[in-house]
Length: 355
Ligand SMILES: NC(=O)c1ccc[n+]([C@@H]2O[C@H](COP(=O)([O-])OP(=O)(O)OC[C@H]3O[C@@H](n4cnc5c(N)ncnc54)[C@H](O)[C@@H]3O)[C@@H](O)[C@H]2O)c1
Ligand SMILES: CC(C)[C@H](C(=O)O)[C@@H](O)C(=O)O
Ligand SMILES: [Mg+2]
Image 1 (cartoon, protein in one colour):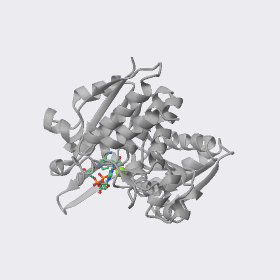
Image 2 (image 1 turned 120 degrees about the vertical axis):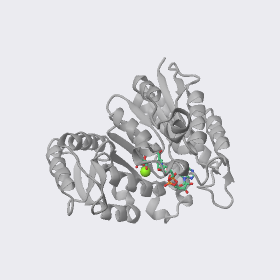
Image 3 (image 1 turned 30 degrees about the vertical axis):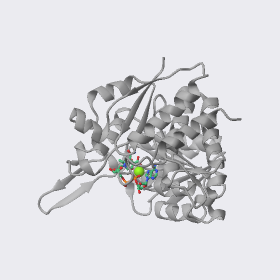
Image 4 (image 1 turned 90 degrees about the horizontal axis):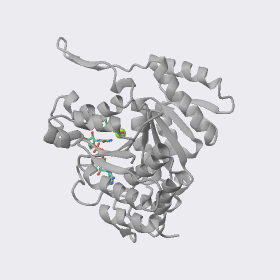
């Protein structure tokens, strides 16, 4: 039986991950494919119980599994630890690197019934349908970092190899070809040497994809354009940190950070997680929005198990619940029917059966 390693992690990760499993089990009930879910430790929870953010047992299980579903890691309790031991670097970045998950897909699609929930004007956010393809195992996050004593200073290095750029940009062209044929490569080539290199390689790869319309945009402009006129974008491909920042921003084009799902892929294995964090400010209150994690579960069925029909069933069930006016507090407006985290998971399960 295919196995999925489940890593709830910290904060709301403990609350949203069970809701995704609940929905996955429900959708797979009548399916020929059965999946075994196996929980393991990561992040602060792993530091507390096993002494490190990515225990060997977790990594071994993840390497052996067919896919990984992750909640979120981190929180104030572990903020004073040295960086390499922290839940983020020692846990999340370590597992991404160990599984070579270089391609992070973050879909940004505004659902019609959430246009009203947006903090942006309806005419700006309606019909938004774009994908950010974020490079996930290189760049500033993984380059050499450190401190010097005299004079006191700190540094991080933004470094990309040709191979790292080529493989993510190739994927960007392939994705654009299957969508609306537009690829926007976001960089800072007016300043950064790594961006100039990124652009050169992107232009070289572009020769293989004449049917794709390639544009380049500086990251500061891209941030502005995303809130000014987001429907101009189809696929955005960008380096690790730019993608991190732009996707939190882009999540608001869907109404909430609680809606943005993600798939981190390497061509063989996938790790699926919401793009948001452990939200310590609302953890333990049963108010977090579990939909980004539930939708990440749908991405898992699509990309790791080729279960397109079941993935769509989940996506439609989410839409149906929202159409009926149910919202978690992050999306709620006066008059909406507010549900807690568990109740939203139950509502999605109930909607799976409805035609
Ligand atoms: N992938 C991950 O595991 C991941 C991602 C981002 C941040 N983090 C970590 O999470 C911790 C908190 O970081 P932060 O506060 O900057 O970012 P965050 O994404 O956790 O929270 C930002 C804001 O969004 C809200 N929010 C986030 N997810 C929500 C959801 N599902 N439903 C409703 N509201 C939601 C939070 O309540 C908070 O107000 C830090 O330790 C950070 O490093 C982890
Ligand atoms: C927690 C942090 C390391 C992580 C990142 O920056 O990649 C998160 O913000 C994300 O977007 O997945
Ligand atoms: Mg982020």
